[in-house]
Image 1: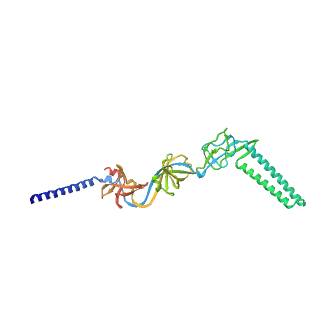
Image 2: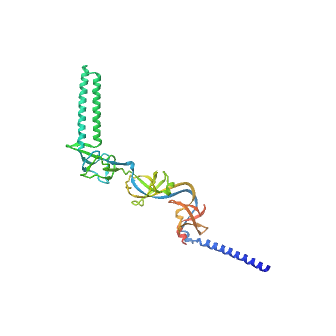
Image 3: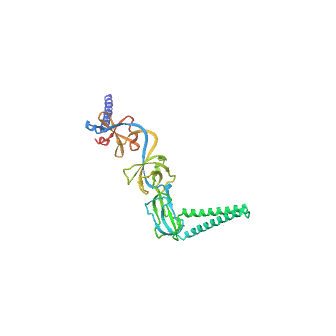
Length: 365
């Protein structure tokens, strides 16, 4: 009886011991399968870096579009009705402030010219009355009150004339060769970015559509689309890098200056505005852009060079040095990257050494 019990216990102990050894062997085998050993020549093809704690600055990539700087866009309208006899500017032309963009022939101009003639006549009459009043005052025929009244009449007539002249000058109205014309002029230096007027057209003063739109293009806006899930990450003052299809190798730096408070319900996006100096006139309204926003999370995290990452089967790995020429394939979790670093939340400790050049080559050994 006791012999059978002793034999049973011995068998059980032997079984568990064998299982433990098998488990240890499996672990060692699994560990060894993650180890890579390089020869001297291979070691010369790689570089190493030490894992450190760094300020976490990640990148958020957004789609965007170049648009006019609405602070420097002017719509140009006609203030009289008439027929277009000449157009001097085409779409895309550069124009200067005061340049005549188009000329209209208008019957309304005669009314304004008539007002000018009447105003000039009133000034002449008032001046003559004032001179007479001063002469009669010297002979005691007129009182000082009569002179003051004549002076007031002259001032009122002069003021009215200046008003009419200013109106005519402001709106470019002239009477040339008995053919009253009205000139549409550019209010600013810039480019013609829209045009809705042609020779022979009849223009009505009550038309709410502008004849021309002028934009300086010295600065432009890049409107970046921020998805609802990313709104909390983006803030005014965040620095950006902007790339366009037209200039894929050119990186344009900017800063978010304004974030809209209204969400586009159809696209679930909110717009962030970046004002860009466009003195070289490279950016055109309507261009598509990729906006890389640099997010400062104001915290420190474990960081590895971005080149150290190996992406395989939807997971990230790094090759960790295990001394001399041996390296371990280590699975890690990251929460963000930028142009230089990846920030690790799990799988690495500070001061560990990782391969940062040709890591994919080492992983494949």
